[in-house]
Image (cartoon, rainbow, N blue to C red; front, side, top):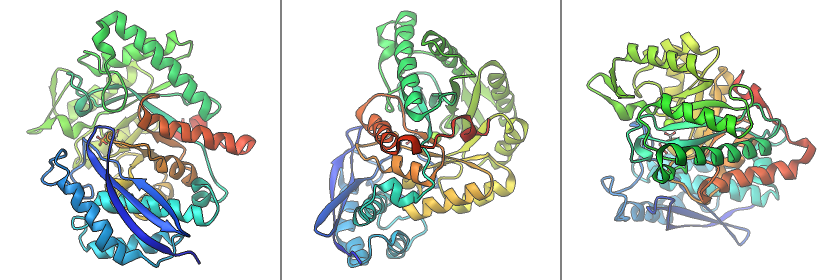
Length: 422
Ligand SMILES: O=C(O)[C@@H](CO)OP(=O)(O)O
Ligand SMILES: [Mg+2]
């Protein structure tokens, strides 16, 4: 049996230039490292990130998380078998002792949990996706965020992400090519419509043009899809992440130049669904509103994937509540929202057992770490969202998926439209 010989951590930078935690686990004399990502539109029920009062630039909170890995976490897990992911994750949960990783920090536990997964694969002489997935590995249909709004961009567009979903493709690599071509034609269209400033990009690599409404954004994307030679609603579909908690105040949603009640927002979404080939809506209502999320799911859930991100925060308890109430029909899975790979896996399995789709997701603050690409393939979730088809921290994941597809050759399973139950 291999043993974890040493646990270390250091501060490195994420894609926004903010400090984050890199954990290093030594097995068989080899150092295996992994980096925690970080959100901007974080859900209120997420695992706690150690960031010193939310100040992301002084680095003191991250230093504390780094220190916790070097001391508390190292004490709890050195000597354990790196292939016993669950025991290691539970040892961290126990050493933390809070219900939201407040003492060790969700960023500390995530980085260690990722590193342990990679170390387990290393000592097993396997690729991470093989080690996790055994024999049911599946390449995902990706969602590409090509127009950025909300907290990820500086403009007036309140909806955070406007995405393309090339579910009509016959392989992952074809999805990526279709997305890159559409991204490129969108760039030309935006430049000619709004001027050269419109092609500046937001946190996830999508453009941040001066559009005011989601319809304007989706209309331009539809044009770009056609210009690239694809058929909207057949080859490439649309998805949005409303991240609506960010524009919810005093019982009203300020979106698309309107001030809407939850009920009015249901009608607003329904008119957008009627106008565009929109097949996925994430966080349509604020993170505590299971009732209206259930109402929308009931009304359109047979043709639209309703995804819970801030709503569920990859937390099995919140997910179980949502399932009971019929809120959403898909889980957005972010390991750092709950803080360990094993707890995220629990939420993944609960989703599958209850007929909910699962979309593995990056954060807006990312790094070169590609662990989530392997988790997605190994768990066979069939969907991933990891930003635009550009910027190194996003292409790191897409390129990793290309490599996995290439390694699998004719054994690569790709679900296409089935991943979204279309
Ligand atoms: O809301 C989201 O889905 C994510 C990732 O796209 O954003 P953030 O990491 O800022 O929470
Ligand atoms: Mg989201």
